Image (cartoon, rainbow, N blue to C red):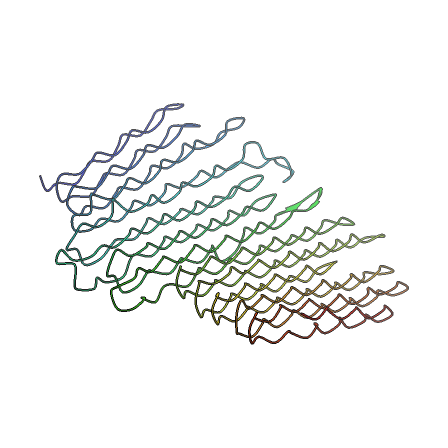
Length: 451
């Protein structure tokens, strides 16, 4: 009745792990069993009927030469949440093997399991809805594998009398980080924040995307590309009461793109990963999340003819805000590199008096190697639009051109980003973005268009 579920048995070689046992009324679900070589891990057991947590998923079976690692088990669901029960965490993916020369992955790493969502929504009279499980991190390996996505937060509900406000809806789980690998792994997305029930105070915020996409590994064939940053989760929606609209949540911020790896001797560096997008704000007055910064491009390898630097990743696009007075998220700045990345676009403001978000700056162009050209600066992102009365977002500034290497020519400056348009009633149009600075011998960039 009150006991926890038992752990699932581990699988023999080639056999999947057993599922974790389900809990009784109050207990937690058991952990899934580890998979045998190349086989999947067992799923976590479900939490008890009252408030047990879901069990964690089992680890995927290990990789052997010529055999890919098994996929991990998923986390068990939280209990029925008559009180509360968190979702189980995703199981870990296995680490892949890499060839002796560092270039040929024998098998790849497996993707980490997703965090499961929280159990069914909290019942009438409960204080809190519970959090979703956390996505496990991606494991290192050959070509990278992604981190698991965060589980979604559960929704809150009203008290049984229908008059007292409830507490917050639960956060979405965080996305797992991308594994370090040959062709960098993407970070997992942040989970969506739980929505409130009737009479609740707030919808909770979406969680941010994984902080970094997986970095690219150095390979004999050149630097690998950085992985993308995870996207921010959406903010939960607010509900109306009889006398006012409740405030609601901010969208999660996008994760930063992973850095590109440096090239081997004479080879090109990898491209930086793109920044993750910001999550949408809640329905009423939630702010949009910011876009993640683009990853930095890898350096070119030295040699008689040096390799080119990798491009900077683009900034993530910020999300629009809610209906009313919210600020749109700002676009992410772009990473520097052989060619600077483009800045992300600012999110639009709310429909009434919301301000548009600022465009992200363009990335700087990389300096030229010996005898090489400097990279061009990236364009600035466009400012977000204001939808009624409010100010538009400031435009992004163009990135600077890179300096020339000895004997080479310089890159030109990037274009300034366009301004957002003013509101339909009283909003003023924005000015164009500043032009990118010239490189040592290159031309200056153009200014951005006005709103």
